[in-house]
Length: 101
Image (cartoon, rainbow, N blue to C red; front, side):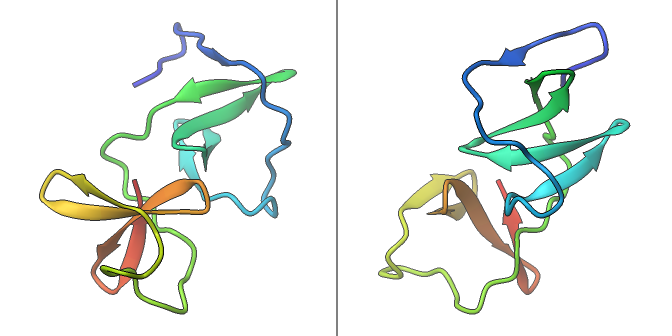
């Protein structure tokens, strides 16, 4: 996990994240991380830093449909379950909702 002594800038990020930007977010160690294009980052000055929320439960946005074989989203085996690639990030079914992975 990234600590205060580690600094890993995310290069080439043109999108500005905010509460209404459409990307999943999670409070993490005193800042807000955004899940975007298969990785996690947070604002730091004039750029974004890479971060990790491994082990943190992050619920995805609400879905009006269920992911399954043939739903039109890429299925990726992940440990003991299947993630579905959806709008640039991965979702996994969990207890009546989807989690970000």
